[in-house]
Image (cartoon, rainbow, N blue to C red; front, side, top):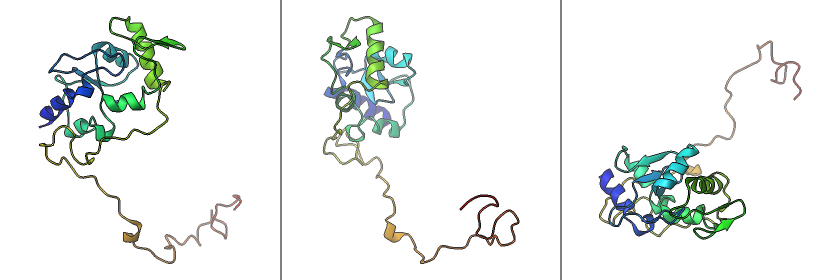
Length: 193
């Protein structure tokens, strides 16, 4: 099921174009690499650039994936290229255009242009959005890959404060009256209270 879900995510329209440089994926197949930290489906030049600055990149076909890792790539978990375009690239110049200190890469540019842009974008946050990303309206406890996929796991709710037992007084943990290193008010000797 993990492999099927990953392949469906890979083929979503928004994941068929590299968010950094606009390289188009092979129709019907998609990109073969994912930058795990930024949850993006990326081309080979961007893969090399992410790896050059120690960002973890996994192969879709050559790596083992857990369902939790695949779920992290869904829109509801701020994964995928649409989320990256909003979160990390919202204020970037158009593909192939210059910005102070560099240029947004386009297919065919030198690898140095790719590396500089990836560094500026993801490490320095140069083009980061100032507004939060709003995922699509599918509930976060469902996989966005396909409506035919079943519930993967429901989110755990923290206990409400009303369900935690309360006491009007703090419990006494230890009687320190015979401790020679504590003063009469319970702090170490020589320490001000």
